[in-house]
Image (cartoon, rainbow, N blue to C red; front, side):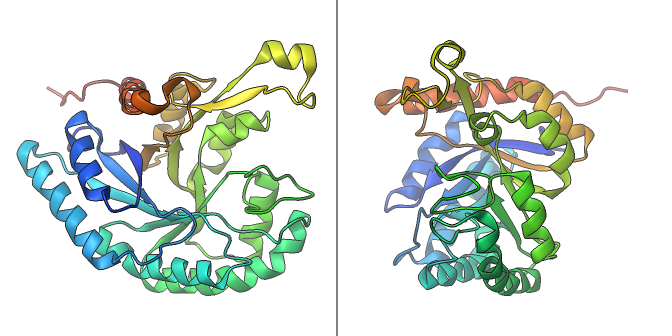
Length: 300
């Protein structure tokens, strides 16, 4: 067994012309896995070439200390229910996942804009029945991020997969075993839901976890509520928010969960600009402590 190879800790890296260089710079800082994010579209990225470059970089670094590094997931965050191009990009990533050495393709479930969640289900069924079949053929898992993207049950623009009520409807509409979640506690806290009981219930359907937290400004909420136009919460890095990550990881372990927690940076207002990597390394150190600290082989 390698050090903590049941639950690994990494970070999310946007795809651009310096992605390989960024990963090279991050590897010595301790990150064990990397999720690639293609934002709304893949564009003209040569996926096989990028996959080959990254795998060579990761394999070369792993050879130095014997601990494997890997791509945990590839993510695309457009709206596949309104954009045929986004559907094509989903297909491309499902086909390319093996080249990256991963099984997980993640993103938004999409949404029919400005309509209640149930009105997106017919189109969701049409799009993801086909994508799920493609993923099943290629041994790939599809993980829906639980981001509300400023939407709610009645209206929104991007994603219906932000609440357990919608997950139940989605998985009933497309009953494929490859469909699951890319979950994080941040979005649940921003909706005033307790993430830990939710995790206990849904762990078996979570394929990937984003390491992102939320800080609720309880004094603002007590004084003004949440509809006064005054910020009452913000996203933040693990270790600086409301989530008990030690309990969260313990729940994952007790449920038999295996996978990666990848830190989603570039959201914490206390670690912007030149402090971004400092904050991400602090978040990695916090998650590593919550995971159990230094791995020690049994001596009995």
